[in-house]
Image 1 (cartoon, rainbow, N blue to C red):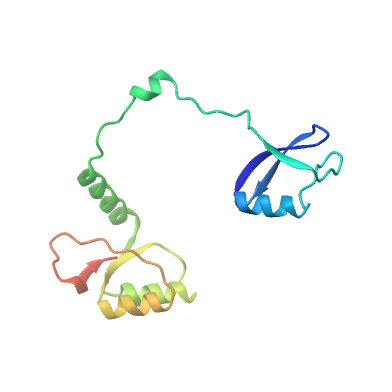
Image 2 (cartoon, helix red, strand yellow; image 1 turned 180 degrees about the vertical axis):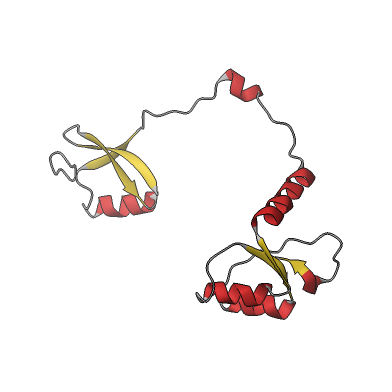
Length: 142
């Protein structure tokens, strides 16, 4: 969505929401855009009075480089603390949740490549996080 400030030939200013510039132009050329005050269809875009300016202090405020290793550890810890570990029964539990046999909950565990393929085919969303110390692609943490 894009918002344009518009003005009719009578000087009324209003805003219009469109999917794109092309959408506005097409609708305006077909007289589909009208002033909400006087129903005038002679509409033009005008400059918006809104501007964004950063303060001097904001320009020099940085948090430094992101420590991705620390961030990854925090994500893994969060998952370990807040997701139920179902171990190698991950796919079975995911199917049960998906089809309403089990209540919705966050789970973690492992799945084989074939199980992952079946989950994807059924439209079950999951994401893989490598488990520390496991090198086999079939045994990734989900």
